[in-house]
Length: 177
Image 1 (cartoon, rainbow, N blue to C red):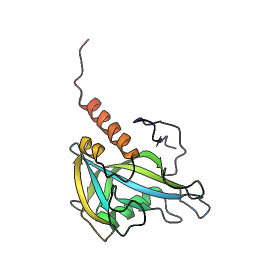
Image 2: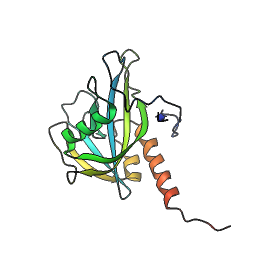
Image 3: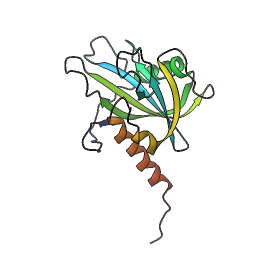
C-alpha cells in the first residue's frame, strides 16, 4: 500500500491526506467515478504539458498532462503505460505516483479523479504527438507552467509549486553547524 497525496484547491496550498492505493488494483465496473491517469514528465527542471485539442469535450484548448481514462480491469499503472504509448509514443520506465486531484468542475453524481504520476525516464525517444487528442506538446520551466493562464485545472499550480519546492530542497547545499 502506498500513501498518496490528495490535492485540493485551498488558497495556494496542497492538503495531504491518506489515500488508499489503487495504483496496483484493477478498476472494475463497480467504480462510481471516472478514473484518469496523468503523467508529469519532468526533465532538467522542466515539465511537459499537452494542449488539449479543440474538439475535446472537457478542457479544450487548455494545457494539461498526457494521459487518459482507465479501462475496466486495468490497473492505474497499466493505464499509464498504455495511455502514454497512445498519446505521446513513449513507454515510461521510471515513474512514481504523486497523488490525486478530484476534478472540481464536475458534479458529485459523476466524480472524476486524476491519478498523477511523476515520470523521469522513458523509452521511445522524445515524446511526440500521436493521434488527435492534443494539438501541441511543450516543455515549460516549472515556474512558467505554474503561471500559465490557460491550465486545465487551477489545482495544477499547487502541484508545480510542490515540485519546485522539492527541487529547491534537493539542490540546497548542506550547511555545516
